[in-house]
Length: 94
Image 1: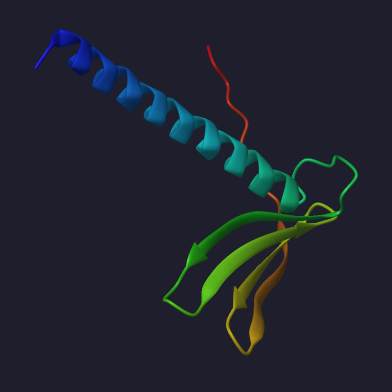
Image 2 (image 1 turned 180 degrees about the vertical axis):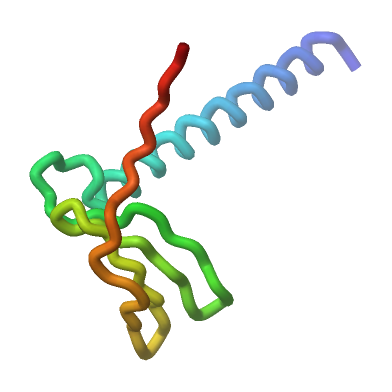
């Protein structure tokens, strides 16, 4: 096989990886916009969420500078803790 074939395969591989990276970036931005995190005047935000098992997840929802811990399931939603103080991460680089 000729070296031009290997160069062509290598460039095709790099192009596919670049397109996958671009698609990943676009999907993250779309998900970020749909979750309501982009609008500054939104009162309701999902701060963090984790899967408990395949059907249930726990989420911290922020509304008016108060955090609420909620377990979300297929058929039920349960508020675990409400009016938690929101913790803003501040980085002090010295």
